[in-house]
Image (cartoon, rainbow, N blue to C red; front, side, top):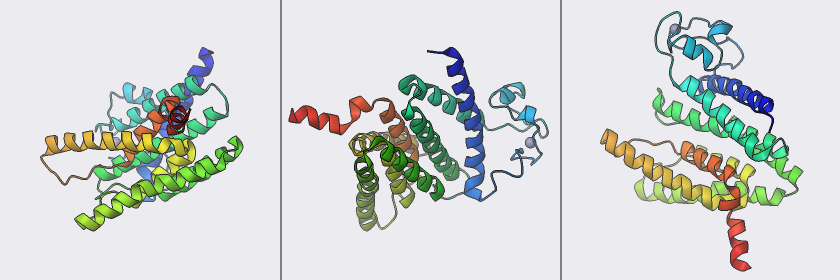
Length: 262
Ligand SMILES: [Zn+2]
């Protein structure tokens, strides 16, 4: 393993995480991601390049804006560190084969959608939102890789299964409770995940996401004493999808079915 490549991929991950922060903050509010350049979201002052270096600027500024001295949200360096760590882990698992590029893109999209859902549900939005542009881009890219791998039907089936497996329970829930549980965005996000992970991933990802959802739900009820506090589901799906990516050999239900049949 080449340490130079590892460091290089980590640095790419840090700068992609920095770009992700821009996407998370701007896309839900329909602000251009190109101009204006980076600015402090609190005092709107433009940031120079030296206040805009991933993680390093946060440490040098001790987490405070140079102009207004207000705290820079911890979200920024966290997003950059998580992205860099996952990029390095994808490289350690997949080397520099085509899967590396597939799963780097996958991790980037899954994190962007998950963080956008969290950010929009705690910010001034009522419920989290998942911009359709990421879903469309993800399904398109996932299916291109599926064609390259020569398994298009396996991934197409996963797109349909990911959508339907959430749509039906949510539909029943809305009939019984007369209010919406999960949203369209969650169904589409699972469809997008399926385009990268294939049909055999659906049961494991659904099980893990539901488990994380229950844990998060109980935690939120204990902490807020509020039973109707909305919990964004996309981050649960996102975490489950990333775990699946690293442990596919163990969790793929197609592998299981072949053990049982043989
Ligand atoms: Zn400021």
